[in-house]
Amino acid sequence: MIFAARQLQEKCQEQHCDLYVTFIDLTKAFDTVSRDGLWKIIEKRLQAVTKVKETIVRDLLFADDCALNASSEQEMQHEVNCFSSACDNFGLTISTKKTEVMHQPAPGKPYQEPHVTVKGQNLKAVDNFTYLGSTLSRGASDDNEVGNRIAKASVAFGRLRQNRVWERRGLSMST
Image (cartoon, rainbow, N blue to C red; front, side, top):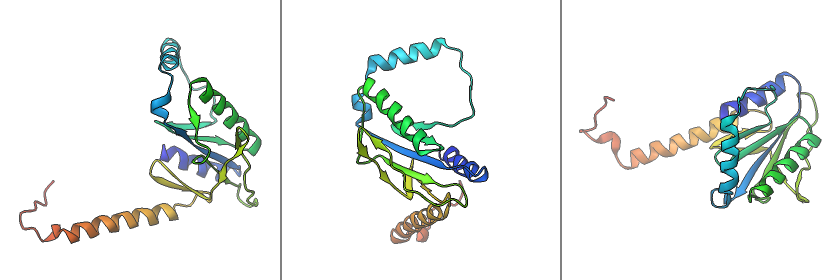
C-alpha cells in the first residue's frame, strides 16, 4: 500500500497532475460493520469474473485504513460523498476529527488548501500524514520518512546499548 501511494504521488508529479488524498478514519470499524451486508457482497463478488477496468487509482484500502485519491477538489468531494453514503449503508461512521485531506499540487502550481467536507463538517488539511506507519508528505518528499526511520533506529539501538546487549559474550552472531 505504501509503495502504491508513493508511486501515485510520483506519477502525478511526472504528469503534472494535482493529487488530492483524503485519509479516512472509521470509528470502531470492526465493531460496527454489518455482517449480513458484508456476506452479501462477498457472495456477489465470488460469482463475478473480475478484471481491471480502468487505470485510475481511486482508493487504497487496508483493514480499516482508507485513502481516497482524486485529481481535483470537486472530484475528491464527490468521492468522499460516495464513500460516506456507502458507510451509512453498512452502519459505519467516519470520524471527522481524525479524517484528513492532503493536496499535492502539480509542479509549478501554487498550493491551495483543500476544502472537503463530510456531512457539512470541514476536514483538516495537512502537509504530512502517517499512513500505515509511513509518512506521506504534500511535496512527495521522503525526507520526513527517512528522518522518522533514523530516529526509530536510534531509539532501538539506544535500548540495545542500555541493556548491554553488545557486551554479552553468549550472543550468537549467526542467523
